[in-house]
Length: 116
Length: 110
Image (tube, rainbow over all chains, first blue to last red; front, top):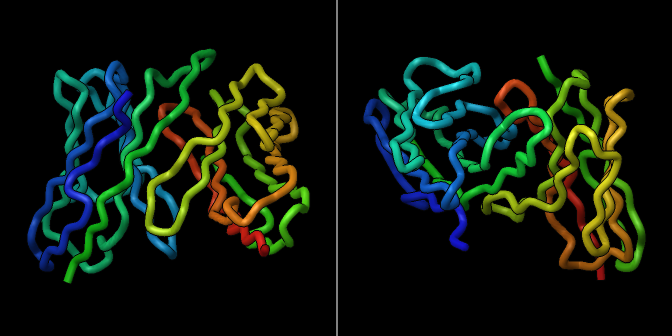
């Protein structure tokens, strides 16, 4: 079956611009999570969506937002880009996330965002 | 707040050695624990998932154990190969978010 697809793979933006990243989860998966990975901070949780609802949000400023569509595809938006937003952005999909359920997460290849 | 720690940060071994990677977490109320590998510049590849009610999982040369009460997990790699060189990350799920350790960078020398 097809894996998690993230587009675009690479992106270069200028400070102050905004950007939208896309994530298509594995068919049938309803939970999509987003992560930011940088050399200094490692992998940090951004937010998680399930059935179009944001269920949890990490400690990021309001410039970072997301949404999930009825087909479970998700988008992440960053407004007013800063140099420090340069990172690898990863999304993961899973069937469900709760105790007692197989919640194995599968990751996409990521979008490498460079802010200049 | 869940904190996940991985030791060691880096490890270099000759081919053929058996090795153990360690992961510890502070909040034992986890849904599950998952081990991943990441090659440079790439996404994460799932290796093993251990559900909260399980003690260990095995896949090929990999064996992962989980001790929730002590907040520890280990990943055992048998007969290491150069192709095993990568960064290994452990992650725990609770409260609808997954927290990662900083990873162990493994180098297996031919």
